[in-house]
Image 1 (cartoon, rainbow, N blue to C red):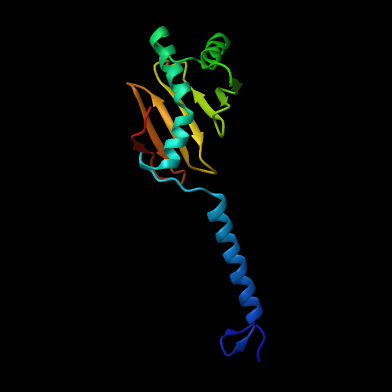
Image 2 (image 1 turned 30 degrees about the horizontal axis):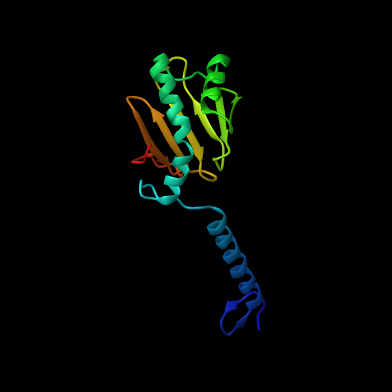
Length: 161
């Protein structure tokens, strides 16, 4: 038998088996460790993640009604007011130009941002793994989008709140 031939009649079958095992393990680990999310409002995973942000969205909307602007992460007093209104179990921490919002009911941090040039617009988002993200934007009301993180465009989805 010739070494290195990958034919059914002979050859290096152990090498072929090893290659298939490695490929299967890589594919299986990718499937197990990276949850998939549908880009529809009916996806129960997206609904559960969006529910984590309900309190934050309610406070941002309350702040907007009171001040006619979204809370600015660059202003310590506004960040403190946001954290105070969120209540016990929540923390807001400045991370560069963003605010990281954590809560006991949240499975991961949510990032919040608003531009000083456009105080009427703000964004709250959470990564859903390596690349995808769920995003809520306050501009002319609030709306949700799903960013698959694969280079394709964000997709609007209907979720409450």
